[in-house]
Structures are given as structure tokens and as C-alpha cells.
Length: 110
Image (cartoon, one colour):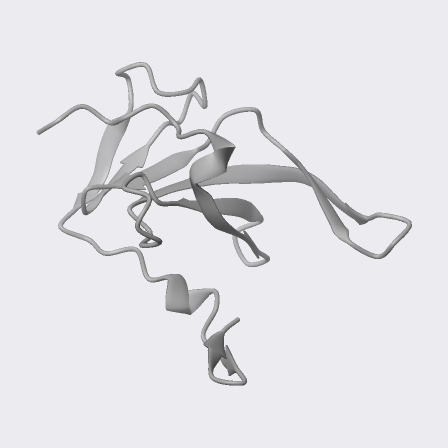
């Protein structure tokens, strides 16, 4: 198995989702730059609030608790970034973004 790549730069981020159920801030990336999600991180949210303009603001852990890449879910209980101590949580799994964004708005994904 290839080693887990470092967390991508924010410029390759396609979208972000807050999962209320798990209290995780999930970031979706496209390492290939083709608009398809191929790398995902999930950070625990310490605090959630709204800005003066009503936009959500999330205060998260510095490093992710989980990573998804190459059809594999990795767990990093130390939350110390990608450094080789990540553990394979589950293999041969797809990340289902529809779980978080199941709807269409005017025919476009929302």
C-alpha cells in the first residue's frame, strides 16, 4: 500500500461539510485537480458559532482525526498530522458525499 499523502493545500479543496451528528468538520479535496473527490479529512469541532454576518464559524482541532484516500479510511487517534502512525480503519470503502449533500438545487448539486 502506498503511504498516505500529506494533507493537501487548501487550493485543492472542493468543498467542506459540517457533520452535526459526529461534530466533525469534513474537507473534500481533489488531488488530481479534476473536480472529483479523491482525498477527505475530518477534524473534531471544539466550538461552533456564527459570525456577525450569520456565517458558520468552526473551531477545530489542528489536525484531522480521520483521512480517506485511495478507497481506504485511516484513523489518526493522536491527531498529529500525517507522519506514518495513522492506522487503517477500513479498506475498500468509498466516501459517500451524498450522505452530507443529498439534494439538488435547480438541477445542480448543493
